[in-house]
Image 1 (cartoon, one colour):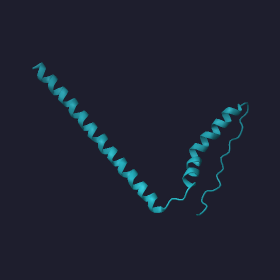
Image 2 (image 1 turned 60 degrees about the vertical axis):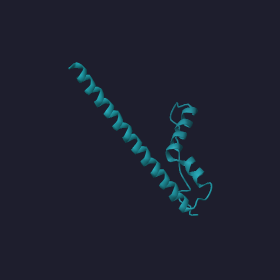
Image 3 (image 1 turned 90 degrees about the vertical axis):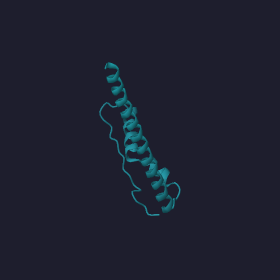
Image 4 (image 1 turned 90 degrees about the horizontal axis):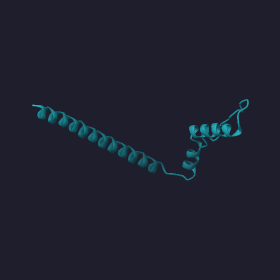
Length: 93
């Protein structure tokens, strides 16, 4: 296993008159932004490249299915709105 980005510098300098809790909060925010905790969890166990590819493919398929479902819901909503307007015009006549 190659050691890529094993050393990450996340530093927080103390500002004048800043409470310690606020400084810790800024530190945690930076750690989340750098995704350090997620990387540690991902690298805890070795995962074969084929499994990584399979997971990525399944995630893509799930994303596409969600996109299609959202599109279908929008189309149904658009059709329902059209029918409401058409029915209202009919009632007026």
